[in-house]
Length: 148
Image 1 (cartoon, one colour):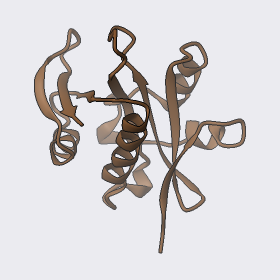
Image 2 (cartoon, rainbow, N blue to C red):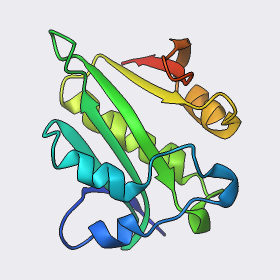
Image 3 (cartoon, rainbow, N blue to C red):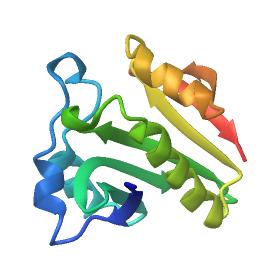
């Protein structure tokens, strides 16, 4: 039986993570992983995670505490991707579930995420995970919220 886990991005796994690719139809929905990994080195509250399927790097996600929230009870899941070769297996659902559990352990009482308006797959995924639409961000992304 295969197992999906989240692990911090490290010196040992960042290159494999940076090389992951989305299908052509999804490019532009998520910033490249190498950009996100670099960004995390300058934003210490960012939590980059490699998504491992058994021992294979299968995806990437990143979240953080909302630094504008005085109680630090709000978190943002702002990067999530599953490599093209691993899509359609339910890994996105499992990975976000694991990330939400990490956030809750850190004191989250609500989580935000977003997706491009034409990314219907992401919209359905987040709806299945209990997120609801709460607005539109400045860049046009659909903003979603989930309470714990």
